[in-house]
Every structure is written in structure tokens, then in C-alpha cells.
Amino acid sequence: MKIEPLTREGFAAFGEVIELEGARHYGINQGFAERYDDLCHVDVISGGAVKVSIFDVKPRPQPIRIDLMERHPLGSQAFYPLQNEEWLVLVCGDPTEPSSYRCFRATGEQGINYARNTWHFPLLVFAPSKFIIVDRKGPGVNLEEVMLEKPFEIAA
Figure 1 (cartoon, helix red, strand yellow):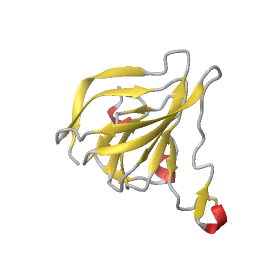
Figure 2: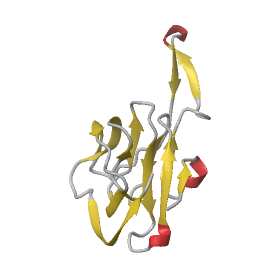
Figure 3: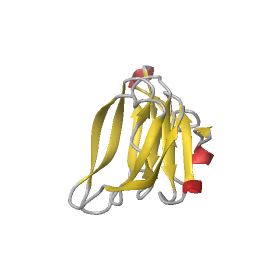
């Protein structure tokens, strides 16, 4: 599978890229800080609320076995790395259709916000990593997983 660089245009069908480049910003705190606003749209269906978490993630063995995909029908899910390490983002339009899979290489200064109902694989890192996660909490089932009939591997 070809691994593409993560760009706003290339990822647009699956959600948003979160990065400072090109973002609206302004100085605050007497000029000692720069504030970057509206980096992504947090989407939570009514009855839910926004939750902020930190995930502590370990690398998977290489080549990476892809045997499931997941999605969140009740809200978007944003990931932003807390270290400057590259990581992978694997998404698809339909888990049963191999041609719909796309894999992106993100820099350690890029995050992503999966649009609601976007099929994706869990976090893929090359080194132990931590991420800030912004997603939905509340009533209802917000996780759907599908096991792949034909698992495949990614060599990164």
C-alpha cells in the first residue's frame, strides 16, 4: 500500500488535518503566547458532550497487520501528537473494498480529526507516543468495529 504525505486536500474526504500552518492566530498574554483557534470542528450528536483524553500508544510489530477497522457514528474524533514523531493514519471508505483504503504519513506537528462515521485503524506510531484526543462522551454506542475477512499488512 502506498503511504501518502498527510495534506488537508488529500485527507478532506475523511476529516480535517490539524496543524498550525495556515491557521488563524493572534498574540495573547502580553505578547508571550500565540493563540491558534478553530483548528478543527468537534462534532457531537445531541445528548453528547466533548471529552479530552490522553492516549499512551505503543508501536505495533512490523509489518503492521491490519485486521479490523473502526468508526464512531455519534461524533468526530481528533488526535494530536505530544511529541515530534511521525505516525500513520489509515482510513477507508468501505472496509470490504480494498481499493478504498488510504494511508497517510503525518508529521509530529500534524494531527487529524476523523469526521463522524469515518472508518479508520487505531493509532499507528513508530515510537512510544502520547496523543491528546478530543471526542464524544455520552449516551449511545459510539464505536463500531468490523473484523476484516482478508487482513493485510503495511510495511512502513
